[in-house]
Image 1 (cartoon, rainbow, N blue to C red):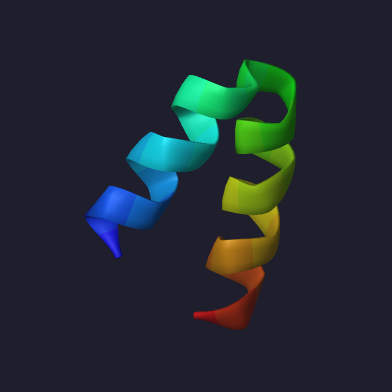
Image 2: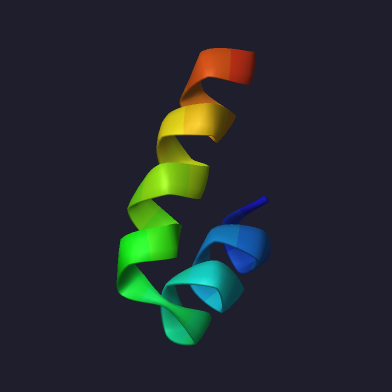
Length: 27
């Protein structure tokens, strides 16, 4: 899961935060 977040952050920081919020919501 850490790798996923790292990849998203590398792709786009703004999208990273959006995905992280969604990921946390899933947890």
